[in-house]
Length: 153
Image 1: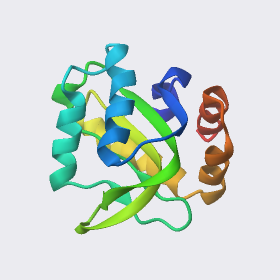
Image 2: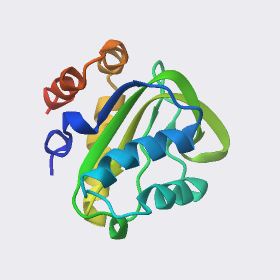
Image 3: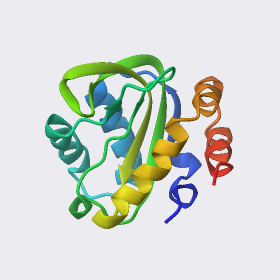
Image 4: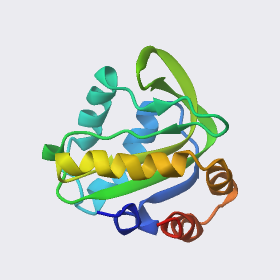
């Protein structure tokens, strides 16, 4: 499974203005639910999972979140993306009592639990490329962001 095959421009929201992590998850889940990728209630399941297993990454430079949930809430695999006009607070992976201001959200909907680790490892590769993340933040076209990510794999 390759991340580039799970991303479509219609699931990308450049410069999304949201108030908090829940709003970011709701906005991206809405895109996937509209297209039948996830089951109704997916956003709630992701937010519930975030309470126990936070996904904000305290990376250098551009901060990122990788929220996802169990495969039972997914019809087929996809990744939705938002670049945030204003950073929002996500709880930190590995340190649930801390928070980090996130600028990019990759929402994973993976239909096979075993493949979640594989998908996350590919996204971690992207997260470690600061120049790629920085370019995503200045792009205002979903097709361009899609091309940037697909070009990495």
